Image (tube, rainbow, N blue to C red; front, side):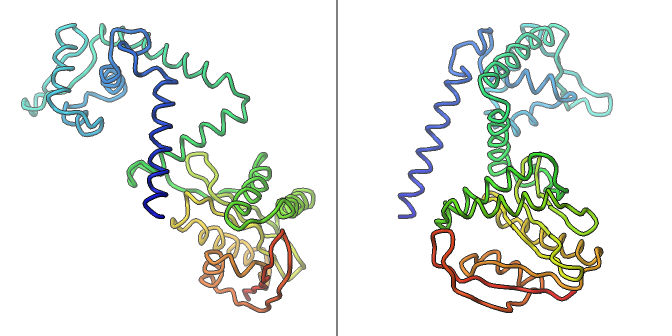
Length: 308
């Protein structure tokens, strides 16, 4: 079953690659109706945006065969697009840079690329444009080298976050636990009440994000003068295992202490194993269990508490 699932994911990724390369026209003999191939255009782009790289850097970062890259660079030199210079301190290192003719050749290529991608995005409403870009960020984050991944930051909520929290809870809990639409309705009620009665001195919504892409959320709301309630903890599947959930819960606990609460409580379900581990790790203790039928499922609700 694991191999069958992997085969399906491989097929899906190959299908996407075929779709996207056709969509942006990289299979044409001349990229963007230019005289340059895709590889040549990419080398031009790097030369236009890097401060005098050496050939080995381009080989490494573009994963180009050294011989192939050497042929591209020799062709560029013959056409007067690239020059090699050696710094006085190390005559063995040859730095590459575009000549004025090279920059003139790159400029219309860059402009056409911007225009074509802009036209492609313009076919979508703004919200769908943002979804497409967020999906691309997610692919970069997941498949890029770990050292290049942007820092995950925690921030307060802002306009648009409450809709995302509600939508993602509804979608993820339906997919992973079979919850029906009444769960999304409950999340919407909780989130709307938070916004309508928000007390910034005693309540907080914390959003985890990376490169502008939301990865998780949690709320701390006032239950009484002495008790704060932790609600709506969520971590996107792509961010699990990175400590996002622990950071979100720790942030709310620190906020609760600073706000003067003596206790933080929460309600969760026994099937939410990962969340329960986070709560236990943060010092919460299980205080009560009760079976119930909610969200189309037979569940065991759990009450947890942390004394501050």
